[in-house]
Image (cartoon, rainbow, N blue to C red; front, side, top):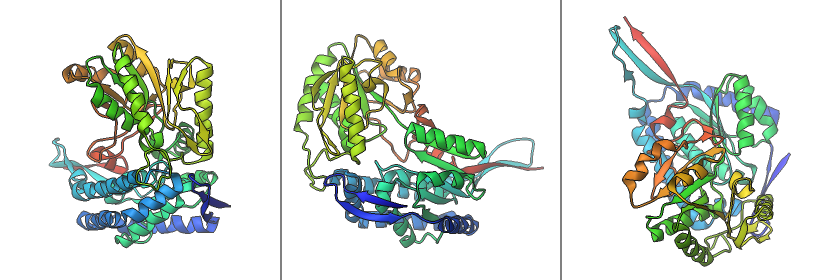
Length: 451
């Protein structure tokens, strides 16, 4: 089998990749196991030195990596460059903090000495998506390698060029052969890799369906998983909010990466007269967004990553309109491009409310009270994050415990940060990435007791 990388902006073929054979896969798994035996013994300061070098290489080559990203999946070039810079940040964060995170945890008992050690577990399979093709990988790779594990990456087929860049970069940074390897395979090969005794755990960022499949496979073989799946985040605006600030943040929260983000604000729930203030201002800002060639630094909205993704969004919007939603603007598609779209009168039972709209479509919902806003926000199978905009932050903080999502942001869009744990609840997955919690997901928390 071959995989074709297609530029979604002009539909031109970039490169073709050949699937690895069964013999090639076996060689990769063997190399991974062998690499782990030696990498686990490398002192953390030496691992840190190499991770710091990876950060340097990311910054030195950010234009090259960003261009590949933009060509392969259509992200506006300025956002691609920012993504590479964020990857450098996460490498530096774990290079500087891993030793502290992995230190033995002393526990006072009746023993003369007792503590928890944090030992690496071995090869970990990462199944990663196309929408943030560098960041999704590095937020797993940096803590995994610093913990002493080794990594196998099964990336999305349309961003294999990005995957190759990452493998080459880590080798240049000094990581030994076998510590990080790409799997150029179709998804039907994943089952056997998860089942292989040499693979100790799996992490997936992707769709709910893919996550369910990987979780079932891993569960069958009693292996740890971390899943970061879809989202339909609510962006709640209370009546006392700073509307200008909320609108500016809302534009970024919905339209970044042409709306292709699991943690994007997808349902705007506006309380009382905030609806009449926020919606017109938001609409004018959307009209100012420039669509075009994602390699042009002036472009705000590029194509979606593939034509079929734009077709799906088109169907979801049309189905929602047929069920009573109002199309305020947008709604047109040209191949992989879907124009910025605003839907109003969105209610439960419509795809725009119930499903994840993965593209530049913003859905507006009116709430008569703050309590109703939270009730509407909670009517979702997803649980990645919620934003609340208000000038009364103390009152908003008191509401944090009533929100079941993995993140609750006040006066800011939901975003990932190496210093904070990231993950969801409900159908958005389980487990945490980033921060101390992220590096401890794939270690053996071993009890050591001395009498």
